[in-house]
Length: 492
Image (cartoon, rainbow, N blue to C red; front, side, top):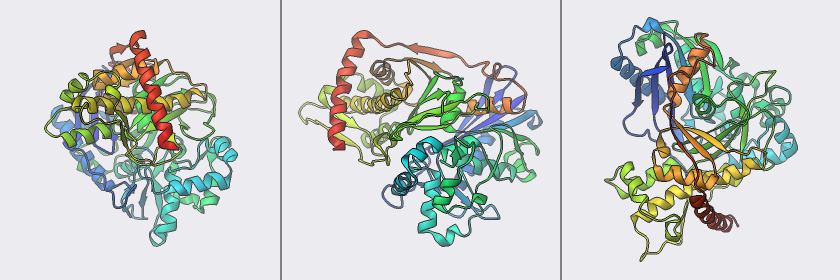
């Protein structure tokens, strides 16, 4: 039997077709060929048209079916992973009312920070496990305050993955994990947080019905099936935000296990068995995919917005160079890039910096000394140091990470990046042949009841293990210390 997984990112839509009997992905597709645009109508805003995600889903599905001949009747479930914290608003006819406000949009920072103070930091950190910050609930409040006529037309609000599921099934639904990532979930009362809704004057009816993360969430409509070339009635059986799903994709499900990713943004995500929070809400706690009433499983997430996007910016700036060439060139510069420092905070407000938006900074640039190799190395090291800064915060929550799992993709394709990460953080890195779309397909197989969690990861292989070196670790920690001093200066 076969299962399809979709991963709705802000750069692209990925799709995978999994043979659940062998655990092997028999086909994959990424659409579009170039990165999707992010609209920035005002500084610190970031928007995308949700319908564009659907159009790329259609194209990616067509590619899957052209690359592997499968009877659509043999596809027994669909899984969805998606960019977190976005806000999609639809009317009673399920028509999109405005562009989606996506994860890296910073317009609601002040709204969330004010809510954190007025609702009480103690309440927020004990019930929401987070500040309302710049998450989905605060973005919805921004629409209420700034686009009231549009707000009055909203029938349902949803996350990007909820929107795609609605396009597939015709039904508006969400998950507990999804509600927690929007800061709508009360971890203490185990229900939608009434105090937040009251404070923001949000009607609970705007939220979608709750469906399980694993299980039948709806069935493919005849119209959607005809558009995609799939069988009507095919169930959607799994849904999760991209970072919980990335952890699931890497079989990170138990307390103490951790996953990392370094795509457009960079994340370290560790599983915890407690309802815990950071006192400054610099890292965030969400409901993990395998949480249940008897076994608390939360995901503690630190995010660095300026990760792959920083490297992509540099690539576009230099022009006519490939990422492998950039990695080779960067490796020619010494550890520490001869004093050149990059602080990659140029993609919106950074949670680890208490929602400050300080922009990216290049420090100690010497025109007579620094060449392209130094700049390329300094960017990769700056990304690693930003991620490690977040891991230091996680350590304050008694999450001491010694081993992380990652897909062999994005920044982890760079040997220099892997070396810097392992030695700065003093962690062992395991790289696997998986990605978010493959993970979503495996989740769909579990949700359909075709495999259990133990068998779902057949076919996933560890490709390599990177261990820290005592000699390199000392060098990277010294350079990281200098970088930290520079960051403290920027934050003054």
